[in-house]
Image (cartoon, rainbow, N blue to C red; front, side, top):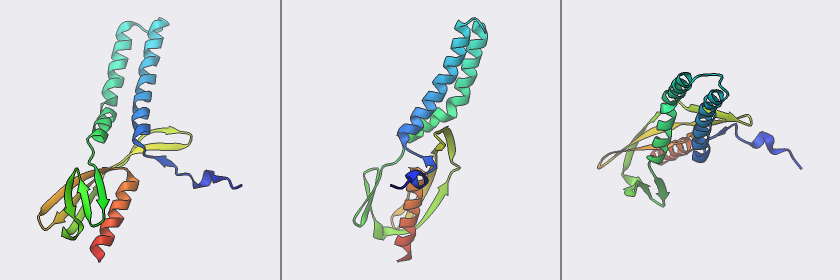
Length: 153
């Protein structure tokens, strides 16, 4: 039997893992300072300031969770694309633009990066522009390849 460890990806973009990673890191860091307080190694003021600093530093990561819950739902069925329950015929698409944002590394687990990447698509159609956001580099690459093949026909 072959060893399949070389076939596994080095990054993971599952929403559950991203959310779990953000909350786990926050809880571990704040629990450490609370633990030091209960051991009487630091006083109450230092513990509260430390927890406040950790919370402020985690606000961008908490905003990632909000963005993930607000992300657009995209389905491609036959000759139509559904974007948040809005139907758009593939034949109406004239061009598209893609703005990929820099990926954010959430944490490392078993030599894998848990990352979050967001991309913004703009579809130019005969009826106007349609914009939507996609979470995940694999989804972004698949949609980019799909639209490139669609427009090359």
